[in-house]
Image (tube, rainbow, N blue to C red; front, side, top):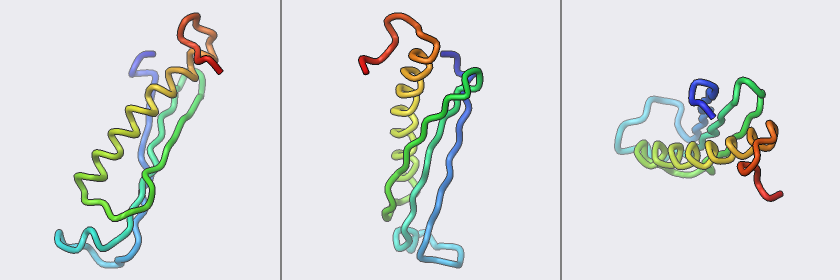
Length: 92
């Protein structure tokens, strides 16, 4: 699967503060993110969510990267199944 055939993005949410946060108060609010990938030629989409919690900026970036890696593998399996590529399909 070619990287140029895949796009994606992040939807995030936070609660607990209505004003800009200072560095020391960032962990007081609850944040979550949904990461998604789309394979343009087939229209297949996968997504996963970082559960709501108190994450530092670095922790949230790490969680998003972890989900992105997992989603890439899942999308590859779905595309292979959709296109019926031998040896690449999952055992479902």
